[in-house]
Image (cartoon, rainbow, N blue to C red; front, side, top):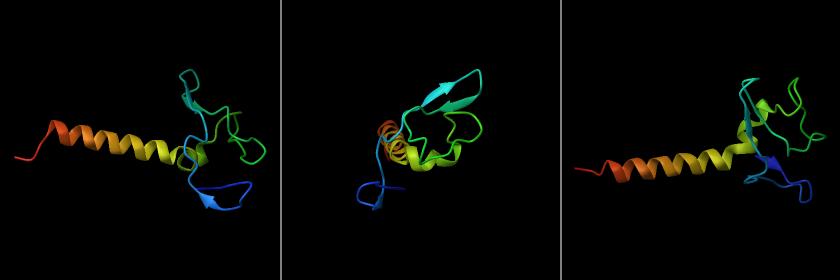
Length: 77
């Protein structure tokens, strides 16, 4: 969860931040997060401590889609 900077209300912020894999560094990079509000972890663009805060909605949607796909492929017998 994150706090809305205008309303000061905590909530989920779907699609708040982008994500790109940097294979050479073995990390997930984010270029759209507010660098003033969220400190990086040593390398610019590394926000590992914020994984769930930034990507919770995406992770949740992905899990839902995988479950639906699995259940369609494996109907109850």
